[in-house]
Image 1 (cartoon, rainbow, N blue to C red):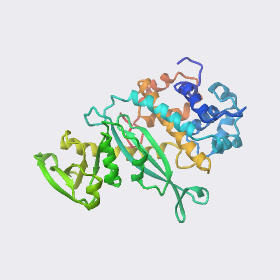
Image 2: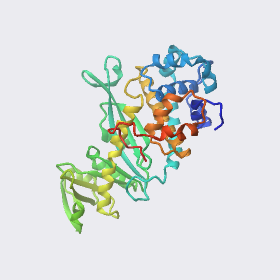
Image 3: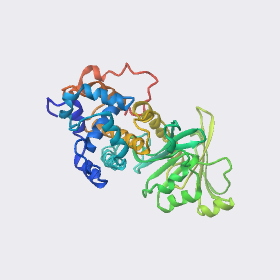
Image 4: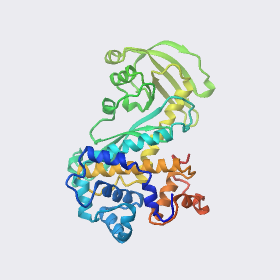
Length: 389
């Protein structure tokens, strides 16, 4: 990275612009556009994410102060609040959704060997959803309840590197389990879910796709034991059984045997009943996999704290989805930069440093090698540590 370039420019050099332009052409994003391209829109919105701007007016005001520098960071069009608002309103959000998938594919290769606490060769995903509350009077298309609006962020998180590999944005009414109808299973992978996803017809579809699942049994779970394997009770395990379903509908929906594992957590003294179609893995590993599912909960908390996905710059469905997908692009881009530059900092620290130095003319590696930037003792002790790998 040569000297003389703004840090913002150096960061955006990691973007695959050829793939971005392919996504733009796919949805005719620049059709009849003369002055403010989709790339200009992306850079302005990425600036808002990296610098924690709270509103569209906030973004434009800051960029207006930096007007003499915008050309040098790649923003060629004239930036105004109306222009940016119209772009968010009318440019197809799928441009940025598809581009996010390009970045996710790059990140997956970079983090393929990342350790997540369980020694496995298989790819492990955690599936969950998070609700983002919206004001119904401003977002009437996002009706959730009679006097409340909301959207849901359904996320499939790759536990190697905590990279979101699948994201689906729905209205708040869509039940979490319905996302299994949209998800395309990856053969040989393991999907870890909470008991809200227990639907035996959908789980059997995962099984038939030669994918594995780990979930918790509901309180009304009915089964018959066929075989019990010995367990080491000092590890917290209580039983490891092969069972068949006995409920009238569940037996039809899932006609094959399941594995039932009971585990008691010594720290909380809670009893957990796990269900899986994976028989070769040790029972304790199944319990550890479900514990690793908590990473997706931390992911939702982290992005809500550090990315702009709770206060939106526009009120239409297209503007909201555009902002969320560009936020995902920024998150994955920073994860890619962290890996390619071999940075030891957490993503939190990287974002904090970038937020105050985007328009400094300093080589990006020098910024993160500065002695002061490696000292993270100033962070709050309550700061989430999901990305301190």
